[in-house]
Each structure stands twice: as C-alpha cells, then as structure tokens.
Length: 85
Length: 325
Image (cartoon, rainbow over all chains, first blue to last red; front, side, top):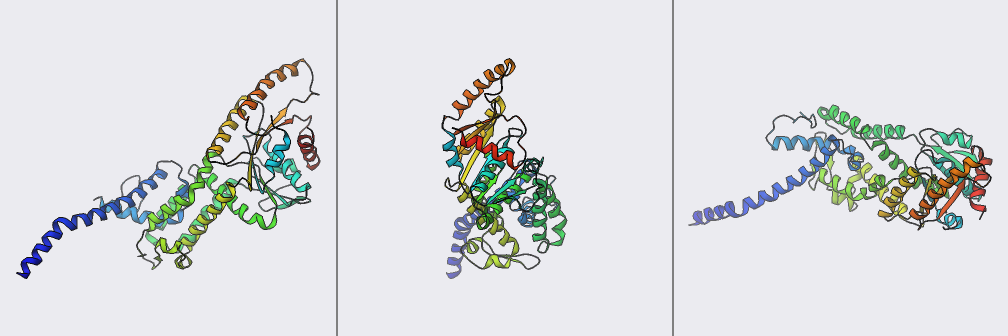
C-alpha cells in the first residue's frame, strides 16, 4: 500500500511538478543567454558601453558562452564567437 | 534675444561644458570663460580634449596630462583620448590577470584588445576620465571648464549604473561560484547590500567603484545648479544645424542648456561692399539661430581682427563678450 502511494506521488511529481521546475530552470538559463546575445552586439560592431565598462567580466562571459554552446549541442565553439575551446 | 547677462549667470556653475564642432572657436571661448572665472577669484581648472592640441597654442603654455598652473587661479590640463583608452585597457588587463583561468587568458586578452579599437571606446574612456576629474576636482577647484560637451550619444551613458547592475548581476548570477583558482563570487545582491564580498575581489571592487562613481557623476551632471552646458557655433548652415541637434538631445535627457555663443559675427568696423554682402547672408543665419534657440540665452561674439592668442587676448575677448551690452 505504502509503495503504491509512493509511486502515485512520484508519478504526480513527474507529471505535474518536475516539468514546471525545469521550465523555470530553462527560463533562468534563457535569461542568461540573453546576456550572451547582448555580448554579441560587440562582435557585430555595435558600440556597447556597458560591455566596455565591464570588460573585467570577460572571463565570466567566455565561460558562460562555453557552457551555452555545449548546452546547445555544439561540441566546438561556433564560428564568430569566443574561442573558448 | 536674451542678453549676455543671462548667459553669464547661467554658466556660473561648478562644471561647465563648452560644446561645438571643430573650427567654431570652442577652444578659444572655453579658455576665455575659464580665464574669467580665474580672474574673478575662482580656482579654475580647464580640461582640454582637443586632439589638435590647440589649447596649448591659445594659452601660449605647453599643457600636459597633469594640471599645470597657467596664471593666477588658472590651471589647465590636456587629455589625449587615445592615451586614456590605452590606460583604461591596461588597467582592465592588470585586474583580471591574476584570477583568469590560464586556458582562457589568451582569448580574454584578445577580446579586450578588440574592445580597445571598437567604436565608442575612446569616447567611453574619456567619459570615465571626466567622472574621475569631476569627482576629485571639488577638493582643489571652484570651477571646472571642459572644452567639449558630452553628446546625446555619450549621455546615454547616464543610464549606465542600472545597465551595469543588470549586466554584472546577469553574468555573476545569484549563485555563489568557485572558479578554478578558488575565487569566490559573492551573491551580487549581498554585495550591494553591504557585504564584505566586494572587498575580497579586486574585479568586483573595481566594477562597484565604477558604477557608484557613474551614479555620483549622474547626480552632478543632471543638477542644473551644479553643471551647465554651452554651445559655440558660427552663423553658418552646418554649425547651426549641428547645434540644434546637440541642444535637442540634451533637452531630451532633461539637461538644461545654459546658452549659445554665436562666434565670429562681423563687427561694425568690418566695412566694404564685399563684407556688406557677407553681412546680408549672415543676418539670415543670425535670424535662423534666434529662431532655433529662442528659449536660450544667446550671445554674439565678434570676429576679431587677429587670432585670439595668449592670456591678454583671452581677457580682451571676455571683456568684449560680457562687458558690452
């Protein structure tokens, strides 16, 4: 009986809760990706004063770009982006 | 047309920006206004950004990167935008050298070097220097006169503090993170709330110092009691048009303009048929300027018979501008 309740709870969580949780996680990641896109404005030659005044964060930006392209299923750094790997 | 007296009181502020395109006499007028402050007893600093270094010629005094005393109460310095950009970039490299993972270092330096030559880099480095000058000037000077004025483009930098907070927050994030060299990022909200987080990290510390300095600069630059903007133009089509745009963009940012100087106006003693014809054209441009800047204090500055060079000539110039009614 207990086992079945636990299974029911797991199914409930799997069907209703977990996807919601990962949607939040995806949204969080998507928001971070937006910042990477903003960073691309530099690569496109559009002056971005915010980026200029936060150049000290390039190490962070490049790390996140690396994680992003891995997450997008690109094993190597895409052309035109940072040469992170 | 408002009298020069209005202009005079409008420009009497701690910070004065004198803007205008090349060749209209901005350097000369800025120097003359600075000299007038100095002669009135205010400890005055003139900041020149002229790439042609003509301020040294006008003052008959070789200017350098550090403030030097030109005459009583009057100091001046010259900023080279290229040099400022170099200084800024090497500062960045120094700060990140220690804590960047070795495998990333080459790419990071490459990107920083690209930023050095990106459009707007020199303007941004210059603006950063302006904020430092304004910040430290209070202790030693009563008046700071710049022979340039931030354009609307530069003034979008006024929204930097918020943009920086968003950008930094986005990159560092809410999580605490330990990178390969063991540097711990603190939670940005915590750092802003007064954590000692920033103290442990020279990068975060530098970014916060910059953001806070821009915030303070914004307060000063948008305070009509502390800062004034003046424009110099000549009674010609292009200078009038460019000044109209410059004034409009300042007004768009809610920054009041102290007034405009219309320079090199033919004086009565310039006579002859040829000059009468020029004067007819000039009258049309002067009328156009009156219409475009009807809400602003306008002052006509006469064309002088010889170049305004040297402290005595600069003094004569401001006497002509302000003492004649």
